[in-house]
Image 1 (cartoon, rainbow, N blue to C red):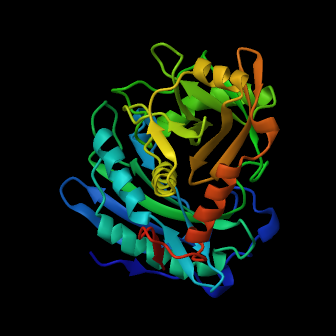
Image 2 (image 1 turned 135 degrees about the vertical axis):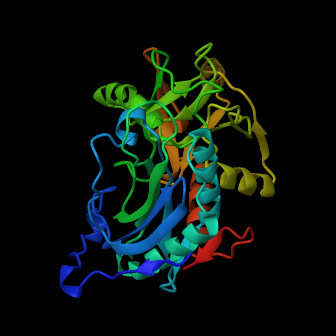
Amino acid sequence: MDIQVVKSAPDLLKAKPDENSLGFGQHMADHMFVMLYDESMGWHDAAIKPYENFSLAPAAMVLHYGQAIFEGLKAYRGTDDKIYLFRPTDNLKRMNDSATRMCMPEIPVDVVFSAMKKLVALDKSWVPRAEGATLYIRPAMIASEAGLGVRPAKQYLFFIINCPVGAYYPEGFNPVKIFVTDTYVRAVAGGVGNVKTAGNYAASIMAAVEAQNQGYTQVLWLDAIERRYIEEVGTMNIFFLIDDELITPPLTGSILPGITRDSVLRLTKDWGLKVSEKRITIDDVLAANEKGSLQEIFGTGTAAVISPVGELNYKGQVCTINNGKTGALARKLFTELQAIQNGHKKDPYGWVVEV
């Protein structure tokens, strides 16, 4: 499939924001990629064009029945001034897993990957140079067909937009405070917890707002059946270092299979750590902290990369982790992943792709 490229006129290019105060998701780059799907034609009209608004019918099926999926990955500027992507095809393959579950058409990974590289190359001046800042890449697909009635849509819109970002959490790479909820649940096996669909995030907002109103950054979700077993944090997978064993909940159908999660598992196993994917309850974690065997907790995800956890609140019981300080393993992982992502260090896994 050919990809048409239409560049924005020079006088219409946007002013770049201050790289030292980017925030997250506030400033969109000059161009975007768009591709259309029709049941009779398949994917067609692939184009890189100036960033602009979409026109959707009020009856567009995404607005009523929620067929919407997305991904998130980043472009990094190396010290050599080259631009790098981290595991981009893994994100696109995961997007196809989401598409299958949501009865949406799979994207042609090779075409989209090529378009992504061309888009980032065209907007390479938007990839920040400031330390810790990156270009966030958001592929998404929505059901664009106009019509009412619960069924798979026959028309879809796929697009990629980019935005320069700083740290996802205001704390930056410092310990965050997490609220453990047993009032709300995120997902159950057999549902859609293991795919990146928009409704999962909408359903998490109430719990997140209530946590933030109490001074906590994010929510830690427990399983939907017994409300004891730890699953994930709102925007991250979660890891526990207990008695020198690194533990993360297994992928049992209700947890998003994070790309950063997988990277951490591979790195720590290669470092010789004892690593386990197994079920762990919130009571196990609190008991380990009481005994002094809980060494670290940290989250993993594209947005924050590694996010150390300094405090948990469960039913009013406040649990301070590692004296509220960043642990050695979280710091080592953060440093290692950033070095690989920025091209500072040799990538033995084939994760990094130069644009």
